[in-house]
Amino acid sequence: QVRLLESGGGSVQAGGSLRLSCAVSGYTSSYSCMGWFRQAPGKEREGVAAIASEGSTIYADSVKGRFTISRDYAKKTVYLQMDSLNPEDTAMYYCALKIWYSCPSWSASSTYTYWGQGTQVTISS
Image (cartoon, rainbow, N blue to C red; front, side):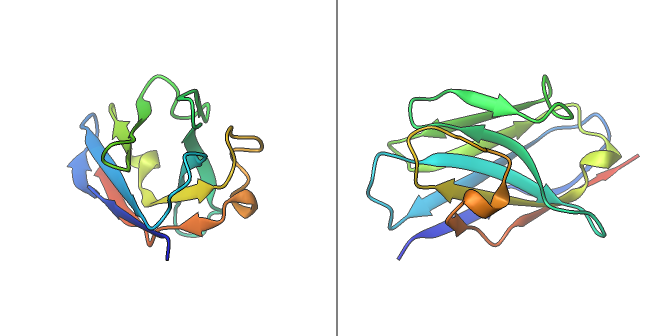
């Protein structure tokens, strides 16, 4: 059984940083595109960043230069380092796994097979 478990969310002031983690268990293939998504109240879920099997990354324009996605294969964990946070970043953050070597249609949530339960990020002004 594949499980994704996010952690690291919390409440910080604008300008602060958080690092989210997503631990993957039960998935044995080396092929996986890992994505981070977020959903704010009343808004649609949006792609934040993704990282392919070979390590290439892609970001939403709204977070480019502020967020960094990375992965540690040995720990089977994906990270999202979030810097220069602002209130517009407030949302529930989810990690997701796509069974693909690269990340085609990376921001399309319907293309991901496995999802975590989410971790809340709240940024105060």
